[in-house]
Amino acid sequence: MKKNFIYNFLLTGSNLLFPLLTFPYLSRTLGAEGLGICNFILSYGQNYIILAALGMPVYATREIAKVGADKVKRSKIFFELLTIHIAFTLFLLSIYVVSIFVISDFKHYHDLALLGGSLILFNVFSIEWLFSGVNDFKYITLRSLFIRAISIAAIFYFVKSKEDFAIYFYILVCTIFLTVLVDIYSARRFISKKINISIYGILTHVKPITILGVYMVLTSIYSILPTTLLGFLSTKSAVGYYFGANKITRMTITIFTALITVMIPRLNQILEEKRQEEYMTLINKSLNIVISFGIPMSFFVFLLAEPIVMVLAGNNFVNSIVLVKIMSPIVFIVALAQIFVLLILSVHRKDQNMVALSLIGMSSSLAINIFFIPRFAEKATAFSQLIAEFLVTLTAYLLSKKVLNFKFPLKLFVLNSLLALPFAMITKGSLLILSSSILAIAVSGLLCGIYFIYYQIFILKNSTVLQVKNYIYCRFRKYSVRF
Image 1 (cartoon, rainbow, N blue to C red):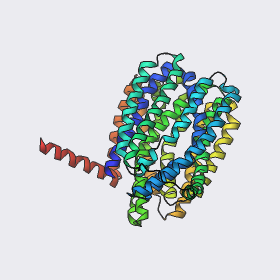
Image 2: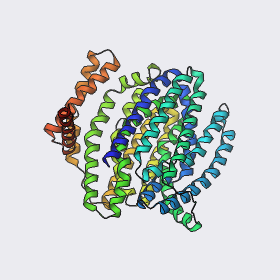
Image 3: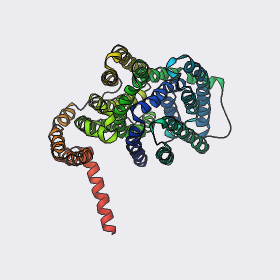
Image 4: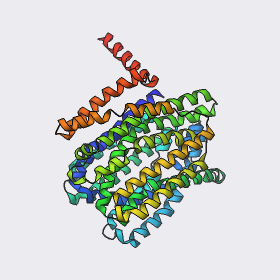
């Protein structure tokens, strides 16, 4: 699992580096309106992608992981799930095509919207769930790094002005298409050439996929649909401002996603083998990491919202600053929710509980967006995300406690919250002394990082941080002795 975590750490690094390289350039080149148009169409299509996939990514990953090294069973499951996915996709794709000619908001963007339909089709063959299920995170990482490098080069070479938002959209589509081609070619290592499916086998998957699908669809309503509603009920520029703030927040969340993604197949296997003590250890360690790193990171993003937006998006995205402040707690909240939902409820097959969670998130998000977007535009959307994520995480915790008798480290939570408060003085001092936003972020990050390491090791004596410190120290000594 250590190697997989390293690969996922590299993948997470690329998830952060890619937006850091492209977002500042795109925000200044395309502006809020250009980015808003592209992300309005993308978010609309994404709703169909989630409907077509149902609960495929989560369900398929755990089912592939469950059969282990049995290639025959794995191939059977793979083709049965692919068949279901194709059927749903073709049905929903036809609805999507009709809708873009009926809805007036798309009348100026028919070509882009039709191209967006190809993303719905390509998603069928984006089979990352297969590689996650067999723990091949090396492939996922190397493939992603290679394709993202091509995408970055294409963006800088072809996107030159505000009128090039269509070119940017084409690049996104080509990137997904290239990913699909590589995935199909690489899947041959894990799947037999013989297609082995049965009607009975397909039907056995329908119920659990549908239940998970309801969860995924409802979840999308409070994570993706708000962007679509913002485009319908407000302006495309408002979509751009929200996209900028959401991008900054989600970039930070990807750091914790690396831990969660690696652990899902491993925890499924541990539970299958009834190694309960080892499972509890991993859950407690995950909570420790999320609390210790998530709280200070959320606070740091809140304090430096203005310079971060100025560096990444520029003066045209001033409206995004308040949105980043509103959404900054989501960094910690979502990371915590991933433990409760993916590592406890999903691993224990509590799919109906996950549906209940998504209903809570959907209803709260939808209500806030519909009633308040006309008056508060992008601020309403940012606030709806915060409320929805908080309610989902709180409920997920209560449901997880019924499934698994774990103890939430409340003392660690309170201590980390209090010890992170000096970040305010450090960042405030940096902003007052330094006129450059980049320097203010860099100096604040360095000083806060040093202080963070100090209080984790010497005040809290955090065992997880100490293990990391000892590992790095041992590796450094080994390297020094060599030379």
